[in-house]
Image 1 (tube, rainbow, N blue to C red):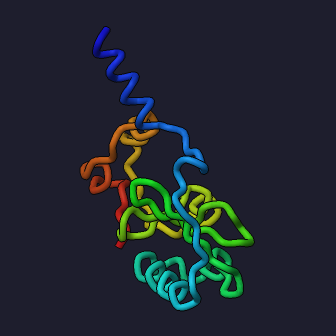
Image 2 (image 1 turned 60 degrees about the vertical axis):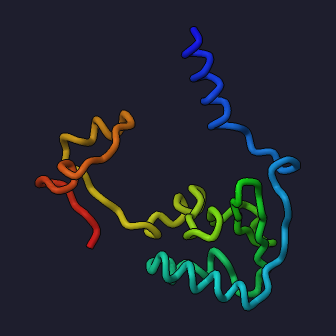
Length: 140
């Protein structure tokens, strides 16, 4: 019983709801020089983003940096207030799932062999044998 309660408590903390009033510590509009640095960083991290960058973050649009608790930064725009990218501390930027659904070519794709598909669909981790065997494919 104690294990179940501890596991339940850990799960609640892991999937805690995001509350804007409690979790956002500040918002600031980025200067144009900082926006250029952001664009350069995104292109360096994800070279395939170049054709879509103007659609995601138009040059004429104002970019907003939302600072949250636990050193999480979220990038949004005034035209599209939905989160576009986020990073932890000063680490790399990651696209949100909404951006990846709209532009799935942003990240490299891998292909697993047929035998691994049913396990991956059930939530298993992808291991090297499933990628390197015939039918599997890794990005260059």
